[in-house]
Image 1 (cartoon, rainbow, N blue to C red):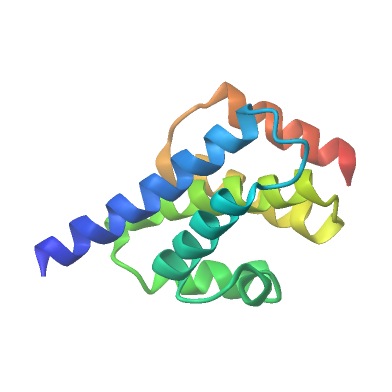
Image 2 (spheres, rainbow, N blue to C red):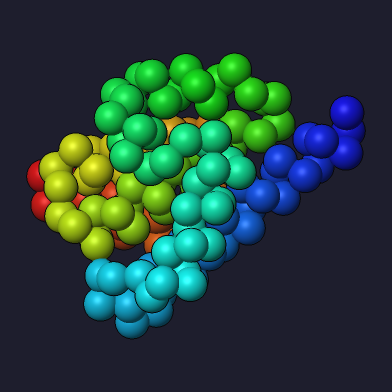
Length: 130
């Protein structure tokens, strides 16, 4: 069971790192075919659903979904969700994605107790776009 938990958190962190890399890169809002395939694989491995299904849920439903997982995984999941919705909002500006990204980033900061200037600046950017 410990190995299962290690695997899950590794997948979450790898997906989060991939999104952070894409956010820093010059991808012009579109994913090349290989990156799109990796993105979809990561979505399935991490959330067991495609992005569209996850995005159709409310922030509260997604938070409840994360809260059912092992408590040591909550912080990485919220960071990942913030990156995910921020990335999707950059790719295709959408008020719902921006609001969810802001909510998940704020939840990440609150639960982790970490101060992150890049995330604070993203939250400010998201607030200005709403």
